Image (tube, rainbow, N blue to C red):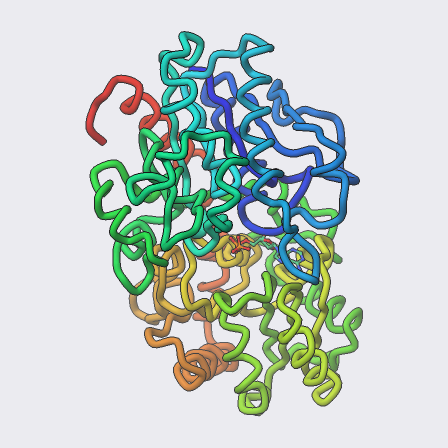
Length: 461
Ligand code: ADP
């Protein structure tokens, strides 16, 4: 089967969040299972690891345009989104289709991801509807985060090159604006999102971001497949970014990573204090507000907190202030730093994700692999992967709370702290259990292949 995988970020070339992890790892897993895969991504400035290959033999098409992509910021800068994002990603979609035609690469499936690639299925069903080259090609569209939709003013619709009639309620119109994501949702042959719970949630008013009606309309063509982890990148036994490698049997060496991290970040070096890590985009979704508003009570629980993240200015400001006030106990690192991220996953005892919604979440999966126990709000992919601690169950793996308030979050953290302080077998048992999980891509990639086959043969999923 021939697959073209289109994404606006692909690890190790360009990354702002989980989409890059998925786009770097899933194509490789598909290749291992026998697919012929190619990947398309914009050629941004300073692209890392420029050699255009992934896996054994996956060619990466870097879509080039100096004017659009040779600048800082994938989607924008601190000042906001790039004002010409519609032109930029229209170009990306058009050029990608042009390129595979030139290269005579005729994919069975074009797998698109998020709004930046959403025009591809639209073009295939409209502009290229009668083009023999794309005759047998089907499109899959994966929603990684429904809140990011690619909204633009209606007067820019011409820039898409689409017939004016498509700016309508059945097409790309959304409350008077252009909504690229909606185009993807309407015109793709099949839709997926990154966890079964999120697949249900996005069909509700609360989580639907205005598109729940569209998604309910396509209920039959929508499933959730949980993301995997790239275990070449995320494995404490084989991680050259951390202070000391360790595995299930040698998990006690995790303590060396904790001390190393405390030392590097200027936290009081104390093994008895549980260390809570957070790594993620500083966006409202991620619940940073809850941490900021309860930080004093949180630190009163006799623990330490480290945050690594970048994003909205308001969080940069308040977190910066608080870290000064609570230095030695609260470490705030406002940047994108792959190396420090690895050290935090390895050196923390707990990993906190108070997300208001979370399509899949990779943080908790990485944390498992590093024997770091997640504390999460029960939503989306967090609900599908983390189960609340129950000493007798033998399967529970973290701390889960239901209503995303500061008080509920603190309660869960207090329970976690209590377990940590208990000098019993339960804590090491829990660590070994989560480290033993297999969250590699194998099983999820098989689900995608199954789906591709069903879509190509017109079978029900
Ligand atoms: P999202 O896709 O919503 O950003 P995920 O939990 O799915 O969230 O994935 C986040 C990914 O990005 C993880 O690999 C995480 O380690 C990484 N990440 C996020 N912020 C940073 C940062 N400031 N520095 C390094 N890695 C980061």
